[in-house]
Image 1 (tube, rainbow, N blue to C red):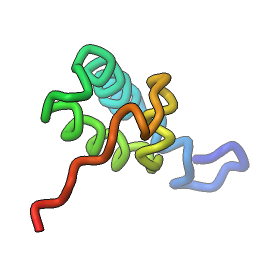
Image 2 (spheres, one colour):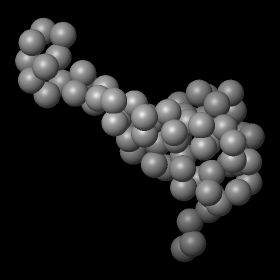
Image 3 (cartoon, helix red, strand yellow):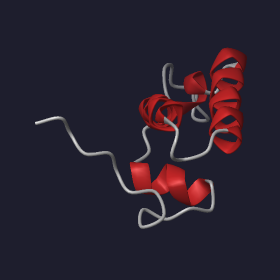
Image 4 (tube, rainbow, N blue to C red):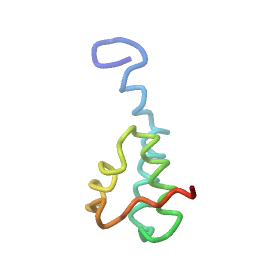
Length: 75
């Protein structure tokens, strides 16, 4: 239930499993150099989990998009 007593709102997302996963992804990002392919993979997972943009997650790490350019697509 959310703060108003309605089922299924944002509070549901704050389950212990959600928090553990979110925290693990943040820790992995902090430990991985941005030039490593694993960084982008983890970044994408965290973006999907929390619903943030790439810029928001990078800002949470103290980085800007100019410092960590988005990878080019293979087209």
